[in-house]
Length: 461
Image (cartoon, rainbow, N blue to C red):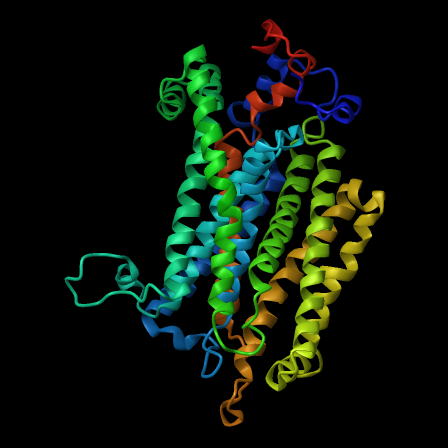
């Protein structure tokens, strides 16, 4: 049975001229032989400075408390929760590309899934920092875990804030196992090609004794498929649970049933935008155009366009429900978003998330790396603004006019956000330098002998 559609065979995802041996040599050499490009060292230096800024901001936060942030009553959730939702959303593209597209037998995922999986882990790690820091006393975070009641304190299990702990922890655990299991065959290839003894030992330990035998491949494929099946519902469940933080409340603008699917679509939207924002520069710097082709960029752009249209539908439904429901508080909240003091942020997110992405209907913007990179950056900014507008506008104007107040972020809010961006980029650079950024064994499935159902030859070793 041939799992590759005719359209894929007519327009190959892997540029001709490659063999299995050349693929292995090309990808392993980026880690074992090739020096890190100077441009990446400069970018890593900038990221390292931002990481130091994060450490400084977190240290000052632990010393002084969350009062250094701009949060006040009634806006008790500010940048911290905005950033948490944003980072969790970015982590969704990796699971979608790796798990769901694997189950749907989509071969175009093979060149980008490893990169996207690593991005998922680092994004979820950055997201997890913010709820802990937002506690005010992060050293007692374990109080929200279901530990034996030795301290006469139980978390409120009916609160979606507690559900977040289980959802995010489960998502990170499954994503990490899925990523690591997928790495094992390639780690063995790195072990076999390493020239220095300590490098061989390091990759050999990580490869867990992989020999490439039929028994190993059988067990590997079974475990990989089961993990993909476990990870697939997490794409929907994790961000749905995050949306419950808002949807189960009674605040205008939050109390709506459209939030779960709307948040999931927005998460995939921002996640694919971040994948493109990272893949396009790395593809250029390392000369990976043979492996990450224009077809990959075009397919990711189409997914981004589709999810962007779902997000646009969500925006329209928010406005329609506020009008059709006839609730005065909901109408006032929508007027505040559009024409109040936060109106500039609202119309800027409409520009970034709806209007500019319509350029992706044009093939030029889907297949030209620079144009697609610019659109992806715009979408990342727009999705952050969306979370900002949703959270802040509903809190700034609650049911009691005497408690209304504006929210103004402080230097420490901005420093923490910039620091997590630097941490995310720095971790991606470490991954690129130490691990094969492209799945070698899955990339070989795109070779002619694999598409034809044949067996591996010496060229495919």
